[in-house]
Image 1 (cartoon, helix red, strand yellow):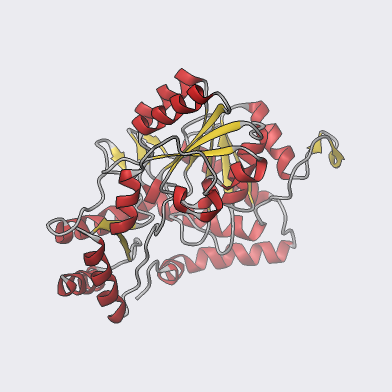
Image 2 (image 1 turned 90 degrees about the vertical axis):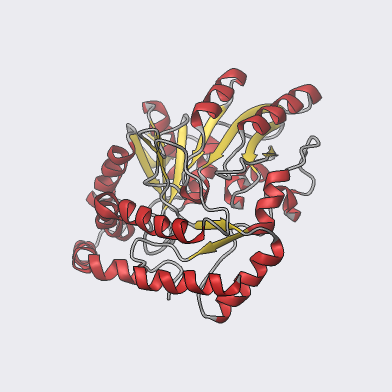
Length: 375
Protein backbone atom coordinates (compact mmCIF):
# COMPACT_ATOMS: atom_id res chain seq x y z
CA UNK A 1 0.00 0.00 0.00
CA UNK A 2 1.25 3.47 -0.92
CA UNK A 3 0.56 6.79 0.78
CA UNK A 4 0.43 8.32 -2.72
CA UNK A 5 0.46 5.74 -5.52
CA UNK A 6 2.50 7.29 -8.32
CA UNK A 7 3.04 3.92 -10.01
CA UNK A 8 -0.70 3.37 -10.49
CA UNK A 9 -0.91 6.73 -12.24
CA UNK A 10 2.16 5.96 -14.36
CA UNK A 11 0.69 2.65 -15.55
CA UNK A 12 -2.39 4.51 -16.78
CA UNK A 13 -0.39 7.24 -18.54
CA UNK A 14 2.66 5.17 -19.46
CA UNK A 15 2.33 5.31 -23.25
CA UNK A 16 1.92 9.10 -23.36
CA UNK A 17 4.64 9.80 -20.81
CA UNK A 18 7.12 7.39 -22.43
CA UNK A 19 6.44 8.83 -25.88
CA UNK A 20 7.10 12.37 -24.63
CA UNK A 21 10.30 11.34 -22.86
CA UNK A 22 11.57 9.62 -26.03
CA UNK A 23 10.77 12.75 -28.05
CA UNK A 24 12.84 14.89 -25.68
CA UNK A 25 15.75 12.43 -25.84
CA UNK A 26 15.55 12.23 -29.63
CA UNK A 27 15.54 16.03 -29.92
CA UNK A 28 18.39 16.44 -27.44
CA UNK A 29 16.95 19.70 -26.09
CA UNK A 30 16.83 19.49 -22.31
CA UNK A 31 16.40 23.17 -21.38
CA UNK A 32 13.44 25.15 -22.71
CA UNK A 33 11.86 24.21 -25.99
CA UNK A 34 8.33 23.50 -27.19
CA UNK A 35 7.26 21.25 -24.29
CA UNK A 36 7.98 23.98 -21.75
CA UNK A 37 6.14 26.60 -23.83
CA UNK A 38 3.15 24.30 -24.33
CA UNK A 39 2.99 23.45 -20.65
CA UNK A 40 3.13 27.11 -19.57
CA UNK A 41 0.31 27.98 -21.96
CA UNK A 42 -1.87 25.09 -20.75
CA UNK A 43 -1.18 25.80 -17.07
CA UNK A 44 -2.13 29.45 -17.52
CA UNK A 45 -5.33 28.47 -19.35
CA UNK A 46 -6.23 25.86 -16.73
CA UNK A 47 -5.78 28.29 -13.82
CA UNK A 48 -7.27 31.30 -15.61
CA UNK A 49 -4.21 33.54 -15.55
CA UNK A 50 -2.62 35.49 -18.37
CA UNK A 51 0.92 34.27 -17.69
CA UNK A 52 2.59 31.16 -16.27
CA UNK A 53 6.34 31.01 -15.74
CA UNK A 54 7.71 27.58 -14.86
CA UNK A 55 10.73 27.26 -12.59
CA UNK A 56 12.87 24.68 -10.82
CA UNK A 57 10.67 24.05 -7.76
CA UNK A 58 7.92 25.48 -5.60
CA UNK A 59 10.33 26.96 -3.07
CA UNK A 60 12.10 28.89 -5.83
CA UNK A 61 8.71 30.12 -7.02
CA UNK A 62 8.01 31.63 -3.60
CA UNK A 63 11.51 33.06 -3.27
CA UNK A 64 11.19 34.74 -6.66
CA UNK A 65 7.83 36.20 -5.63
CA UNK A 66 9.50 37.78 -2.60
CA UNK A 67 12.38 39.03 -4.76
CA UNK A 68 10.31 40.81 -7.39
CA UNK A 69 8.42 42.75 -4.74
CA UNK A 70 11.62 43.70 -2.93
CA UNK A 71 10.58 42.16 0.39
CA UNK A 72 13.41 42.51 2.87
CA UNK A 73 14.81 44.22 5.96
CA UNK A 74 12.16 46.01 8.02
CA UNK A 75 9.20 44.38 6.28
CA UNK A 76 6.56 42.16 7.89
CA UNK A 77 5.16 39.21 5.97
CA UNK A 78 1.99 37.62 7.37
CA UNK A 79 1.68 33.86 7.04
CA UNK A 80 -0.50 31.07 8.45
CA UNK A 81 0.94 29.21 11.41
CA UNK A 82 0.14 25.86 9.77
CA UNK A 83 2.19 25.42 6.62
CA UNK A 84 5.52 24.07 5.39
CA UNK A 85 8.57 26.27 6.01
CA UNK A 86 8.99 27.13 2.31
CA UNK A 87 6.05 29.56 2.60
CA UNK A 88 7.97 31.67 5.10
CA UNK A 89 11.62 30.75 4.51
CA UNK A 90 12.24 33.64 2.09
CA UNK A 91 11.30 36.13 4.82
CA UNK A 92 14.20 34.88 6.91
CA UNK A 93 16.45 34.69 3.88
CA UNK A 94 15.85 38.32 2.87
CA UNK A 95 15.82 39.81 6.37
CA UNK A 96 12.07 40.38 6.69
CA UNK A 97 10.03 39.29 9.70
CA UNK A 98 7.57 36.39 9.50
CA UNK A 99 4.46 37.30 11.45
CA UNK A 100 2.42 34.16 11.96
CA UNK A 101 -1.36 34.10 12.22
CA UNK A 102 -3.64 31.49 13.70
CA UNK A 103 -5.72 29.29 11.42
CA UNK A 104 -9.43 28.62 11.10
CA UNK A 105 -10.78 25.71 13.14
CA UNK A 106 -12.57 24.08 10.21
CA UNK A 107 -10.39 24.53 7.08
CA UNK A 108 -7.05 25.03 8.95
CA UNK A 109 -6.31 27.89 6.55
CA UNK A 110 -5.22 31.44 7.40
CA UNK A 111 -7.72 33.00 9.83
CA UNK A 112 -8.80 36.46 8.57
CA UNK A 113 -9.49 37.71 12.11
CA UNK A 114 -6.06 36.67 13.34
CA UNK A 115 -4.50 38.22 10.22
CA UNK A 116 -6.07 41.59 10.92
CA UNK A 117 -5.12 41.41 14.61
CA UNK A 118 -1.49 40.81 13.66
CA UNK A 119 -1.48 43.60 11.09
CA UNK A 120 -2.82 46.03 13.68
CA UNK A 121 -0.24 44.84 16.21
CA UNK A 122 2.60 45.50 13.77
CA UNK A 123 1.27 48.96 12.96
CA UNK A 124 0.82 49.79 16.65
CA UNK A 125 4.38 48.78 17.48
CA UNK A 126 5.74 50.82 14.58
CA UNK A 127 8.99 48.89 14.07
CA UNK A 128 8.07 46.96 10.92
CA UNK A 129 6.30 47.84 7.70
CA UNK A 130 3.43 45.48 6.78
CA UNK A 131 4.31 44.34 3.26
CA UNK A 132 2.71 41.07 2.16
CA UNK A 133 0.37 38.22 3.03
CA UNK A 134 1.13 34.65 2.01
CA UNK A 135 -2.17 32.77 1.79
CA UNK A 136 -1.50 29.02 1.80
CA UNK A 137 -4.23 26.72 0.49
CA UNK A 138 -3.35 24.10 3.06
CA UNK A 139 -3.92 20.39 2.35
CA UNK A 140 -5.42 21.28 -1.03
CA UNK A 141 -8.28 23.32 0.43
CA UNK A 142 -8.65 26.95 -0.77
CA UNK A 143 -8.43 29.90 1.62
CA UNK A 144 -11.36 32.21 2.30
CA UNK A 145 -10.43 34.82 -0.29
CA UNK A 146 -13.65 36.81 0.14
CA UNK A 147 -12.35 37.69 3.60
CA UNK A 148 -8.59 37.85 2.95
CA UNK A 149 -8.54 40.00 -0.20
CA UNK A 150 -10.41 42.97 1.38
CA UNK A 151 -7.99 42.93 4.33
CA UNK A 152 -5.03 43.08 1.95
CA UNK A 153 -6.65 45.94 0.05
CA UNK A 154 -7.49 47.80 3.28
CA UNK A 155 -3.86 47.80 4.44
CA UNK A 156 -2.18 47.97 1.03
CA UNK A 157 -0.57 44.54 1.26
CA UNK A 158 0.67 42.32 -1.56
CA UNK A 159 -1.22 39.03 -1.67
CA UNK A 160 0.88 35.98 -2.58
CA UNK A 161 -1.14 32.80 -3.05
CA UNK A 162 0.82 29.67 -2.15
CA UNK A 163 -1.03 27.02 -4.16
CA UNK A 164 1.64 24.34 -3.77
CA UNK A 165 -0.91 21.92 -2.32
CA UNK A 166 -4.02 23.12 -4.12
CA UNK A 167 -3.38 22.94 -7.85
CA UNK A 168 -6.71 21.85 -9.33
CA UNK A 169 -8.79 23.10 -6.40
CA UNK A 170 -11.20 26.00 -6.78
CA UNK A 171 -12.79 28.76 -4.72
CA UNK A 172 -16.31 29.74 -5.81
CA UNK A 173 -15.70 28.89 -9.44
CA UNK A 174 -12.16 30.28 -9.65
CA UNK A 175 -9.13 27.99 -9.73
CA UNK A 176 -6.49 28.12 -7.05
CA UNK A 177 -3.46 29.89 -8.47
CA UNK A 178 -5.68 32.71 -9.75
CA UNK A 179 -5.71 34.78 -6.55
CA UNK A 180 -3.51 37.67 -5.46
CA UNK A 181 -1.09 39.74 -7.48
CA UNK A 182 1.02 36.61 -7.81
CA UNK A 183 0.54 32.90 -7.13
CA UNK A 184 2.97 30.01 -6.91
CA UNK A 185 2.73 26.24 -7.04
CA UNK A 186 4.91 23.15 -6.75
CA UNK A 187 5.22 20.07 -8.95
CA UNK A 188 6.97 17.99 -6.31
CA UNK A 189 6.02 14.34 -7.08
CA UNK A 190 3.56 14.05 -4.17
CA UNK A 191 1.53 17.13 -5.18
CA UNK A 192 -1.86 16.86 -6.95
CA UNK A 193 0.02 17.69 -10.15
CA UNK A 194 3.52 16.32 -9.69
CA UNK A 195 6.47 15.69 -11.97
CA UNK A 196 9.21 13.06 -11.58
CA UNK A 197 11.60 15.30 -9.70
CA UNK A 198 11.35 18.96 -8.74
CA UNK A 199 9.39 21.65 -10.53
CA UNK A 200 7.32 24.75 -9.87
CA UNK A 201 5.43 27.60 -11.48
CA UNK A 202 4.49 31.24 -10.95
CA UNK A 203 1.23 32.82 -12.14
CA UNK A 204 0.58 36.52 -12.84
CA UNK A 205 -1.68 38.65 -15.03
CA UNK A 206 0.61 41.67 -15.41
CA UNK A 207 2.84 41.75 -18.53
CA UNK A 208 5.64 43.65 -16.80
CA UNK A 209 5.69 41.19 -13.90
CA UNK A 210 5.86 38.33 -16.39
CA UNK A 211 8.92 39.85 -18.05
CA UNK A 212 10.55 40.61 -14.70
CA UNK A 213 10.05 37.07 -13.40
CA UNK A 214 11.45 35.54 -16.58
CA UNK A 215 14.50 37.76 -16.16
CA UNK A 216 14.99 36.80 -12.51
CA UNK A 217 14.66 33.09 -13.35
CA UNK A 218 17.66 33.28 -15.69
CA UNK A 219 20.29 35.19 -13.71
CA UNK A 220 18.61 38.56 -14.19
CA UNK A 221 18.95 38.46 -17.99
CA UNK A 222 18.24 41.58 -20.02
CA UNK A 223 16.62 42.06 -23.44
CA UNK A 224 19.78 40.86 -25.23
CA UNK A 225 19.86 37.49 -23.48
CA UNK A 226 21.47 35.70 -20.55
CA UNK A 227 24.79 37.52 -20.90
CA UNK A 228 23.06 40.90 -20.68
CA UNK A 229 22.52 40.81 -16.92
CA UNK A 230 20.52 43.79 -15.71
CA UNK A 231 19.65 42.60 -12.17
CA UNK A 232 20.53 39.95 -9.63
CA UNK A 233 18.58 36.80 -10.37
CA UNK A 234 18.68 33.05 -9.82
CA UNK A 235 19.02 29.93 -11.95
CA UNK A 236 15.56 28.40 -11.84
CA UNK A 237 14.10 26.65 -14.87
CA UNK A 238 11.84 23.64 -15.33
CA UNK A 239 13.64 20.85 -17.17
CA UNK A 240 12.21 19.94 -20.57
CA UNK A 241 11.80 16.31 -19.48
CA UNK A 242 9.65 17.38 -16.53
CA UNK A 243 7.47 19.55 -18.78
CA UNK A 244 6.98 16.59 -21.12
CA UNK A 245 5.93 14.41 -18.17
CA UNK A 246 3.57 17.04 -16.74
CA UNK A 247 1.56 17.53 -19.94
CA UNK A 248 -0.29 14.16 -19.87
CA UNK A 249 -0.56 14.37 -16.09
CA UNK A 250 -2.24 17.79 -16.34
CA UNK A 251 -4.79 16.32 -18.76
CA UNK A 252 -5.48 13.41 -16.40
CA UNK A 253 -5.93 15.80 -13.47
CA UNK A 254 -8.48 17.85 -15.39
CA UNK A 255 -10.26 14.90 -17.01
CA UNK A 256 -10.80 12.61 -14.03
CA UNK A 257 -8.38 12.86 -11.10
CA UNK A 258 -10.03 15.82 -9.37
CA UNK A 259 -13.36 13.98 -9.43
CA UNK A 260 -11.75 10.75 -8.22
CA UNK A 261 -10.18 12.58 -5.30
CA UNK A 262 -13.67 13.73 -4.28
CA UNK A 263 -14.89 10.12 -4.29
CA UNK A 264 -12.03 8.91 -2.11
CA UNK A 265 -12.58 11.77 0.36
CA UNK A 266 -16.32 11.09 0.42
CA UNK A 267 -15.76 7.45 1.39
CA UNK A 268 -13.38 8.48 4.19
CA UNK A 269 -15.80 11.16 5.41
CA UNK A 270 -18.73 8.78 5.65
CA UNK A 271 -16.72 6.18 7.55
CA UNK A 272 -14.85 8.47 9.95
CA UNK A 273 -17.11 11.46 10.64
CA UNK A 274 -18.55 10.01 13.86
CA UNK A 275 -15.14 9.57 15.50
CA UNK A 276 -12.92 12.26 13.94
CA UNK A 277 -13.08 15.81 12.69
CA UNK A 278 -13.03 15.26 8.95
CA UNK A 279 -12.05 17.90 6.36
CA UNK A 280 -14.45 20.79 5.88
CA UNK A 281 -14.74 22.42 2.46
CA UNK A 282 -16.61 25.72 2.09
CA UNK A 283 -19.73 25.89 -0.04
CA UNK A 284 -19.03 26.35 -3.76
CA UNK A 285 -15.40 25.29 -3.23
CA UNK A 286 -13.47 22.18 -4.28
CA UNK A 287 -10.51 20.73 -2.41
CA UNK A 288 -8.03 18.46 -4.20
CA UNK A 289 -7.10 16.81 -0.89
CA UNK A 290 -3.36 16.95 -1.39
CA UNK A 291 -3.48 15.29 2.02
CA UNK A 292 -6.51 13.81 3.73
CA UNK A 293 -6.08 15.04 7.30
CA UNK A 294 -8.36 14.11 10.18
CA UNK A 295 -8.34 15.30 13.79
CA UNK A 296 -8.66 12.77 16.61
CA UNK A 297 -10.41 13.77 19.83
CA UNK A 298 -7.03 14.16 21.59
CA UNK A 299 -3.31 13.42 21.21
CA UNK A 300 -3.55 10.08 23.00
CA UNK A 301 -6.19 8.83 20.56
CA UNK A 302 -4.22 10.13 17.58
CA UNK A 303 -1.07 8.36 18.73
CA UNK A 304 -2.95 5.12 19.39
CA UNK A 305 -4.36 5.17 15.86
CA UNK A 306 -0.94 5.98 14.37
CA UNK A 307 0.75 3.13 16.25
CA UNK A 308 -1.91 0.60 15.30
CA UNK A 309 -2.13 1.38 11.60
CA UNK A 310 1.66 1.57 11.38
CA UNK A 311 1.82 -1.96 12.80
CA UNK A 312 -0.63 -2.94 10.06
CA UNK A 313 1.82 -1.47 7.51
CA UNK A 314 -0.59 1.28 6.52
CA UNK A 315 1.39 4.41 5.59
CA UNK A 316 0.48 7.61 7.40
CA UNK A 317 1.89 11.07 8.01
CA UNK A 318 1.42 14.07 10.30
CA UNK A 319 1.05 17.36 8.41
CA UNK A 320 2.36 19.12 10.50
CA UNK A 321 3.80 18.03 13.87
CA UNK A 322 4.66 21.61 14.91
CA UNK A 323 3.27 25.04 14.02
CA UNK A 324 5.61 27.54 12.38
CA UNK A 325 5.85 29.72 15.48
CA UNK A 326 7.17 26.70 17.40
CA UNK A 327 10.06 25.92 15.04
CA UNK A 328 13.56 26.73 16.37
CA UNK A 329 14.43 28.75 13.26
CA UNK A 330 11.59 31.19 14.05
CA UNK A 331 12.01 31.41 17.81
CA UNK A 332 12.94 35.11 17.62
CA UNK A 333 10.11 36.17 15.31
CA UNK A 334 7.55 38.56 16.85
CA UNK A 335 4.25 36.98 17.97
CA UNK A 336 2.44 40.04 19.42
CA UNK A 337 0.79 37.93 22.12
CA UNK A 338 -1.12 35.85 19.58
CA UNK A 339 -1.95 32.57 21.34
CA UNK A 340 -2.23 30.30 18.26
CA UNK A 341 -4.88 28.25 20.04
CA UNK A 342 -6.22 26.55 16.90
CA UNK A 343 -2.78 25.90 15.41
CA UNK A 344 -1.49 24.23 18.56
CA UNK A 345 -4.63 22.13 18.85
CA UNK A 346 -4.43 21.09 15.19
CA UNK A 347 -0.83 19.87 15.52
CA UNK A 348 -1.70 17.91 18.67
CA UNK A 349 -4.51 15.96 17.01
CA UNK A 350 -3.88 15.74 13.26
CA UNK A 351 -3.20 12.60 11.23
CA UNK A 352 -3.10 12.12 7.45
CA UNK A 353 -4.14 8.93 5.66
CA UNK A 354 -3.28 7.51 2.23
CA UNK A 355 -4.86 9.73 -0.40
CA UNK A 356 -4.69 9.59 -4.20
CA UNK A 357 -7.08 9.22 -7.14
CA UNK A 358 -6.28 5.52 -7.57
CA UNK A 359 -7.11 4.37 -4.04
CA UNK A 360 -9.62 1.57 -4.59
CA UNK A 361 -12.60 0.85 -2.35
CA UNK A 362 -11.22 -2.45 -1.03
CA UNK A 363 -7.85 -0.97 -0.15
CA UNK A 364 -9.51 2.04 1.46
CA UNK A 365 -11.73 -0.24 3.52
CA UNK A 366 -8.64 -1.94 4.94
CA UNK A 367 -7.44 1.46 6.16
CA UNK A 368 -10.81 2.34 7.65
CA UNK A 369 -11.13 -1.04 9.40
CA UNK A 370 -7.68 -0.69 10.96
CA UNK A 371 -8.55 2.78 12.30
CA UNK A 372 -11.72 1.43 13.86
CA UNK A 373 -9.77 -1.42 15.42
CA UNK A 374 -7.47 1.14 17.04
CA UNK A 375 -10.45 2.96 18.57
